[in-house]
Length: 264
Image 1 (cartoon, rainbow, N blue to C red):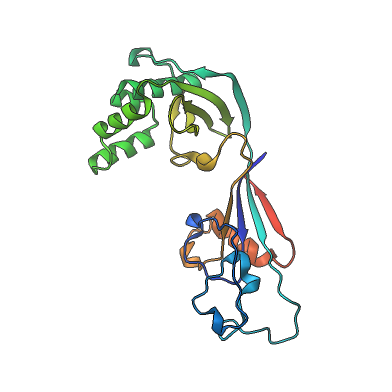
Image 2 (cartoon, rainbow, N blue to C red):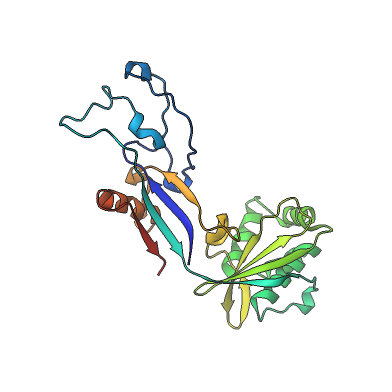
């Protein structure tokens, strides 16, 4: 069980960005003025809220209270999965379209990678499930990315390079295979999600463009994104984890330092 996403909530400051796009805030040195008048134009980030000077916009507590302390409330989203590592990493072969095998996720990845390396756009489309295929076809119609653009990208990414398979992630209903381009400037693995359809395995985007592992790296336990509460108009979907996370903060911040929610 690996923590892949941690959301930290801070009270007292209105956010300017939706939670899903909130940037992490790094620690920094802050010069704290003695009076509110001196605070004009001073930026104090959410990690230093206890240092915000009192004034008209933020008056002192009306009743006796303790000195302020900086706190955080952590909401963890935990993804459960089974993982195995290929030992050694597997150099993926290149096979022609006529010899494509889709009986396993690994064979389906070989078919997908082979099509990209050979510039076979039609063969590449056949490696995806119906929803993804329609999406790519619509992209071409809209002028976003046609066959020529994909082929150019593949040639740049894969020309003269080996592709190795490094690990396998098993979820409920999906298998994710992580591969890496050897000799490329970016050593970051790229994940491909597969689903089983009528006895064959196809690449899919049903979990998103990069699945939930968009920030995942082997050996990385999780990712922290520091955010602040936002108006619910910016979180219109009650099923959005950020929506429920904000509710957790509002209801539980005075009771516990954080909560953990595992996938069902």
